Amino acid sequence: MNNGDAVSIAVIIVNYNAGDFLAPCLNALERQSSPADRVIVVDNGSTDGSMEGIVERFPGVEILVLEDNIGFAGANNRAMDWVGDCRWVALLNPDTEPAPDWIETLRAGVREHADVAMFSCRLSDARDPSRLDGTGDCYHVSGLVWRRDHGALAERRRPTGEAIFSPCAAAALYRLDLAREAGGFDERYFCYNEDIDLAFRMRLRGARCVHLDQSVVAHAGSGITGAHSDFTVYHGHRNLVWTYVKNMPKGLFWRYLPLHLLMNLVSILHYTFKGRPGVILRAKLDALRGLGPILDTRRAVQAHTRVSATDLRAAMVTAPLAMFRRHG
Image (tube, rainbow, N blue to C red):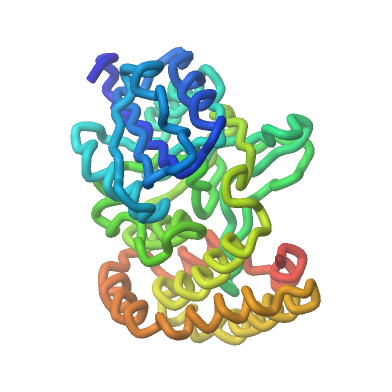
């Protein structure tokens, strides 16, 4: 540990062809008023030269180089296996720039909320500072997810310590032992909604998530993969199905299954009318093809449930119309 602080934090950045984004992110971490105990960059087999000169420019940063791109989920798991001497892990996308007091406010949040295992951050839109990129992730009982306050005016404030279903892993803090206990990120997801899935499994074990509005990070938002690319649509919509099937407790599963099926139908119609039937149909068909292993995992996940369905439902969005307002 390099700062003697009891709240030990390792920052993990997964890089894959991040181009010019990575260096400003690391510069912002160097300017922290309360530095992280460790900063790890996991490179997922980048080919764009984004890692060139990083070791020389940032000698305090640890580099973990992977030969192939194993996805956001797999790369973060490798890093979390590497940082067992830190109690907390802060995930940060390379297309982000944290405010100078980001780590300091995370540590303050941990001290204030000693019984909380996950924290979300206030994401501003790096391309349009007058807007927010989000304040944590919402989970609808249909299985649809969205980033709260995405596109809202930057003047909007959220109470610090307000409950939210899940942090957005573009900038999030997790208690390492509990994230590992829940199984870490599901590497079958590769990327997208792996953060909602991990938060869901941690919640089933009794963990909670709160939002720290004073922990500010500027985020370019899909600055690398593209917000509406086929890659994003495919992984996001395939993984929505797997998350619902794997994690939703039995009582809620059957109660909201009709809504889940309707949500998937609306997804298919939405992208078909946009002239993109191929990618959405492939996502849903591949989700169905992969259900066997997901159902096997479901049995193990549900066996460790420590919260009531009522308490879990209270953390979700239940308004039926929200599913349609937030769709796509």
